[in-house]
Length: 297
Image 1 (tube, one colour):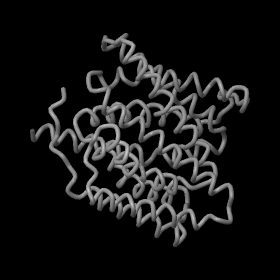
Image 2 (cartoon, one colour):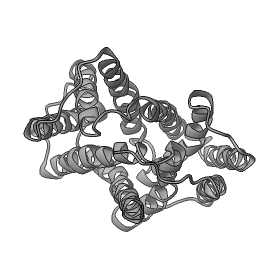
Image 3 (cartoon, helix red, strand yellow):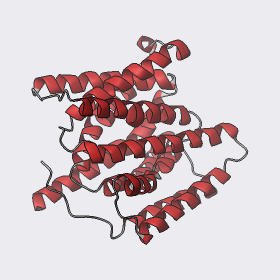
């Protein structure tokens, strides 16, 4: 059990480090490339990498209707829709603020887990949800005069809804599947779907992107997609999905730090207050909710 707990903590920390840096990488990549093409290329590379690993390790890929249906659903709702919204939204807001808004995911997950998984929704969780909503309202009130900024933030929150819904379905239906195998079809579906829309709309040629843009795409494909999602699936099989989503308490703090250190991003007093309220809400909801580590394989 100690070894299992150590692995869970290590996986949790690794995901926090990777995903806190992805917001900055996305922002840098968007300087020279449009959102849909960038995320489509990212997922195509990730799908190719995952397929190679599955073939090299000779992992069994289920062919059941349930597995294929779940994979297609995740490709659309866990990857294609939310990441397109994230990339589009981050064109109009900072990487740090994007991460803060995405940190509302535990609240949405808790509500959906109550409905779909019948997980208990305690007074502590409800209090955290209320604080999170209050923090989002404070942040939105700071951008009333900026239509693009408000729409960017709205896009992030809609992406949170889709990511939360699919995360709960991962918890409910993916326990029997290998975490890497579970990623192969979703990334392929997302790459094809996004690419089909990006080609006629953005008309962008990835071969003309500069070295920095390609460096961000490769980092996001390998670390932010393949490694982080494999670790995420591994965690979801062993820990309460609401607890797994609490990594978003750490991610926005680190993301704000990366944005400040490397991109010169600043946080207005009202946005800072709203961010603090959201993070306090997550802390309130987190205390006392951890379950014991499961015995998944």
